[in-house]
Amino acid sequence: MGETEFLFALRALAVDPGARGFLDDAAVMGDLVLTHDMIVEGVHFLPDDPPEDVAWKLVAVNLSDLAAKGAEPVGCLLGYTLGSADWNARFIVGLQDVLATYAMPLLGGDTVRANGTRSFGLTAIGRADRAPSRTGAEAGDALYLTGTIGRAGVGLNLLRSGQTGPEVEAYRRPRPRLAEGRALAPLVHAMMDVSDGLLIDAKRMADASGLAVTIDLAAVPAAGNTLEAATAGDDYELLVAAAPDTALPVPAVRIGQFAPGQGLRLVEAGSPVPLPPSLGWLHA
Amino acid sequence: MGETEFLFALRALAVDPGARGFLDDAAVMGDLVLTHDMIVEGVHFLPDDPPEDVAWKLVAVNLSDLAAKGAEPVGCLLGYTLGSADWNARFIVGLQDVLATYAMPLLGGDTVRANGTRSFGLTAIGRADRAPSRTGAEAGDALYLTGTIGRAGVGLNLLRSGQTGPEVEAYRRPRPRLAEGRALAPLVHAMMDVSDGLLIDAKRMADASGLAVTIDLAAVPAAGNTLEAATAGDDYELLVAAAPDTALPVPAVRIGQFAPGQGLRLVEAGSPVPLPPSLGWLHA
Image (cartoon, rainbow over the protein chains, first blue to last red):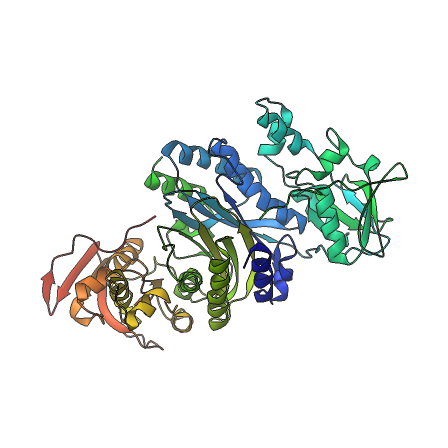
């Protein structure tokens, strides 16, 4: 049973409607929103990444899932694999920083030893009166994006080439759009965060909603090359489907449109643009 | 920052009262009970352990934490590190089995790849009208145990010596005392599960409650040698402090008594018994 089959098998077990078929950013149980992400050394972070930033990112990416469901943070549980004394101490500094920044209470968790690869897990719990799913986009809806994409990708490239710049911070310390998510949730038809890349995530929303989506690259606020930015991950902006006449309460740019049909199409200044070979970051 | 200091630092961050200072089996938030346990290859399970049993145990130990707070399971989130195709398929079988046995909905989670040691996390969420803590034992309370201890320890010894027997099942497929926990919760002063060994866990309850506890070894229902059983872990019975005149609604044996003071004392047929060098399984 490979990864794809395993995920299908998990979905088959997740019969509770709150699981949303494992296809949404988070599970929803009454007014509770629940999400769990794991990060693995050598895969999601490197042994020489600053531990403060690893802690920040672990919490921030889970908070971004809450933001995508319009939820307010109510608590988290941490699964931690012990490292060196210095690593542990620096992780605590970053953890304290991110928890305080987003008023996220630490409620519990587990601390373990490992003789090899370390990994961490975080469960974030939030509360939302109404948690929009990815599946609710309607034909005729506009697609909106809350900020600039591609900054994290630029930051990663800087790091890889041994350089630095303000975008490194965007990569290492993403800022979940919690306030924006809460303001948008009551007004939108569908919402998700952009974690793997704008194109792949927009296509996921369209697929989940049984619709086609067209993105106008000229409209996308991007750092650097637009097509590169649109396929880079780790930006954690919000992607929203809403009726085109809805007045959105937070800054968001209209970048596309849903229509009957299926698939993703790109245009730029009215002309079709071929899809790039990869729409984003595919990962387990 | 070593393990002990790290745990102190985490506790200092866990200021929310629901975190219970990281000293209880689970966090409590309103009527929600939340717990997260991780297991690591080579530490908590071995690569050649049956994957079905690894899945069972991962879920069962978290359910036992819910049981200890009198909670009914409402959902769980799984953090899974992919293994071989065969391992994945067999894990799913065990997962399906344990989720169905305890009517535990799978709500979400994350699946990752690792290039080395694999680890798994499970977050279990339950609901309880009243979740007794470990801290509530009162002087004069009796200490009760819901079943026989030491069976898992006997099972582990059988496995280590290449033998088999009914106790192997007790070790590999612990049975969380969910029904018992729910029935006991409204009536008791303190409750916890016995995961690391009867002696160490009883001492923890006494310490948390600011009391001394005396256990009568002659009264302890044990598989094999009583002192060995009382220091073996993985039994997942419930340990309860209740007024001695409380009629308990489920089978439980009175094995000791709380009194003012501190520490753990052992007696057998009225005579003091020296404490063994290790009271149970200490682990991260």
